[in-house]
Image 1 (cartoon, protein in one colour):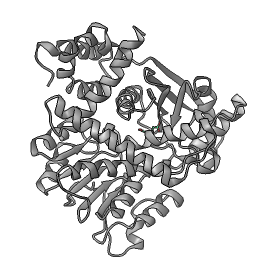
Image 2: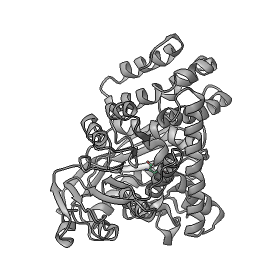
Image 3: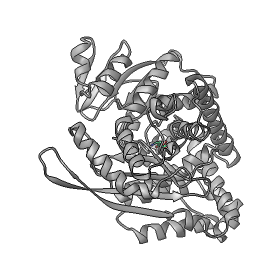
Image 4: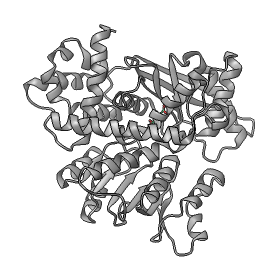
Length: 450
Ligand code: GLU
């Protein structure tokens, strides 16, 4: 994919990335996927490579790896690994979520922190890129266990946070409950009510209206622009959404509000197909309040079908929104979707489609809205939360939503125009990668070798 003389600096950097950490495959992939778009940019700006911009861009500014000991309900001492990778602070303080999941490892966090850096730059807002988390599984843990773990995690991490330094938020496995426990511990340890040190807080304690909805709503706003550009609309379309967490729930809510019918969603155990349209309020009740499996949906809605162990991708649809997890949509799923006439795919999750799946969409002319653009609404409203905290203000939901609309429109416009200018019209992945990297690169040039 990366070929030609002009792109050899990119190839050399990519080779060095692999040689340096040969086992970190998910990280290699993240870098490769971005670099594959950068040939024309590299050619246009030889000064980037000369100033070592690409070589510096693939190395985190700092990586924290720490022990997180905690005591479970039986009194046994358990030990998890905590991570916080500050990738780039060229455009602002480190910003990105924390993920609690048993599969969290350094390579995955590095991949996400790199991706976040490009995404955050693309928003046009003043934030750098970061990611963190732990190999802790909140599933099946008691409230007390989750709290003790979060407190222990923050006891180590708080030294490195602050509104001007590093501002985490939630991600998979980290919602308002976990953020509350972490913020409570942050306050005890720092003795400062520094609300801007963490985003995704509850609305009653320094959070922003609309932050919960932002990633899902934002993905649908991006998709709406992409369809509009082709004289298409959401109204009347059939959609499938993978996942049933925060991103999926609010993507479904907005799709339904704008006239699409969501016929399937999923969790890690299986898929619900509801031809009458997924009852989003029921999914919210099951997942947000009752913490149940999605299979319970079919017990309560007799016309719905539960497919044990199945994914949503073979349910015929016009629109597909992967909103669950990384690498959840592989090449054969992409072929299935294309074969069933799916016209557009918008990534609500981070890197849910494999490189091969994206190639299938490219070949088929399927509208593809990459996560680093389509799911940028979450981090953008995090910035609105930081702005409110800094000014000690509380904005209305409508004000936040209106601003989210503007930001997603800007993100779309940047992707669209940049793709066109760099010879790949309508390829929003190319547009997002080039526009994001260019903004970081310009700042890095201005700041000298740092
Ligand atoms: N975890 C979210 C993301 O992947 C949000 C990050 C944030 O708000 O800092 O963009």
